[in-house]
Image (cartoon, rainbow, N blue to C red; front, side, top):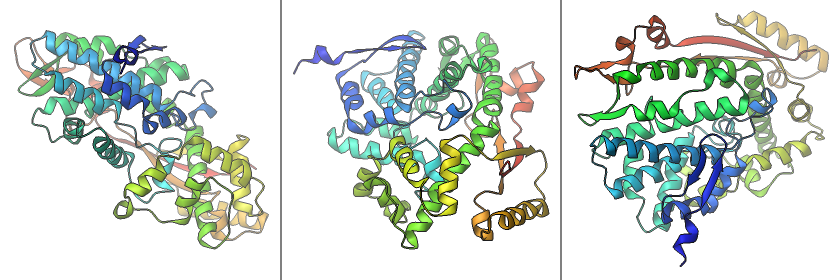
Length: 407
């Protein structure tokens, strides 16, 4: 086997040249489960607001792996012992951390599968790949699950200052053109250290962390929770729910084999076996888009109209309030829609609905970001920062939305 051929290079628009560090990482990237991520958009339907946001989960995963290599190099330079096996496990774990995402990233979790998170599906993929790779991913899975005794390694993968967030903020900022999210990932990584098995940031890096937290808050309000993106994702969820509803009533729809399986079957955690995982692995954005292009001509009023709205970007109007939407206001709009289109209350509910969104840039209750002061004392970033707004960012902000047709 020509191993030299496996040390290929990616030209990434964010970090420049990224090299594949070893043969196993190459084989994981080349695997069909990982290649599928090329067909899963990183930001769902955000491209309807930010036309450049067409990057994929594949881009993001490669970027995360690159940052993890940088983090390992930094920590080793500062005297933190990380074995070759641990490094390979960290790289594999961060590479595969998002492999369980479904089409358009988060929409599947609320429509096709029943209460199954992408983290759970990622773990199932990792377990299956571990069998295929003869147990060489066992350590990666332990770190991913937080079961490995060296806790800082899990924090690098799934913490409040992990390589996942450090990549997606910078990457999503670049592709959307929203400069407020542009963080200095190299500076943050260069300031990392480990004390008592906990990941810490050296005191001189505190301003980079403050910028990171503020950027995260701004990106959530300005991009991830943008009202148009929100309306588009809710429409997609409603489309898939309606398609599933029609199938259960005996109405057959045209769709790919994989999508038809999930329309026909209720799939919860207890049923999510290897066979279903294999079917899930064939699902991507293309299945959903091609299905919607067919369904827009369906004789079902709800399904056809929802598909046309999303395909043609004729989206619902969204109003966002700081207080919950009054029930009477929703009922009035539903009644109006029913009368105008001659549909049932249930059908009108696909076009008029409310919900809530929440933004919390920093949680003081979960894997805190610790600052290593020059004195050797370790302090939470909310206390170490002289910016009052960092404490404010730890409080969740809830807003309420109402979606309804423009006309």
